[in-house]
Length: 209
Image 1 (tube, rainbow, N blue to C red):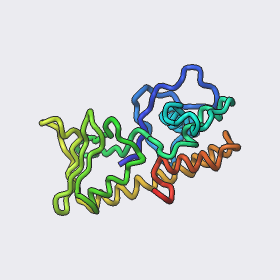
Image 2 (cartoon, rainbow, N blue to C red; image 1 turned 60 degrees about the vertical axis):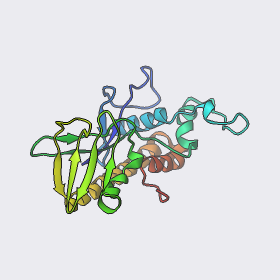
Image 3 (tube, rainbow, N blue to C red; image 1 turned 90 degrees about the vertical axis):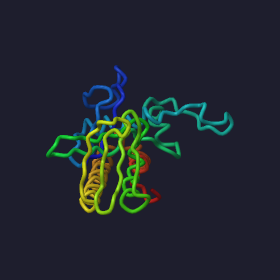
């Protein structure tokens, strides 16, 4: 189980900091082993996904986007109450090769939905196109990569093993956040504290999450 961020194509002329080279709609794993360039990729992607849109605010109430290019890029990420980190947890059965990937409109900010499978309603969905789902039946959890496909394969595992995997994925996110904080200190020192706080909220690691 890996936390992954789905990527948009970066601006072709982006030079504000180093980013990794990826194809659009690739999934980027986040962990304590993420490279510095891909920490930069993540910050850019989250800034693009949460870009400031004047239509989101009443004219008299909306914050004014700054003129500085870095401040302008980070503006939405730093001022929005709700942040979206497109992606989720990717799960691979290393024996069969069956993989569950997050669907459209699922986000890492919703990763605690996996705990609903274990401790709440007993089931959860993780986006659409495909439609990945997880359902607990007794002490077993069944993961279906696309419940909308009649012939979709499945992954079955003990609930205790899923709990271990979710805890490991949470540790990966926390380790990534530590890397991102250090990256911000090196690359965007004037934005370090608010940027790290925004990333914590986007990854559902903030105290209020």
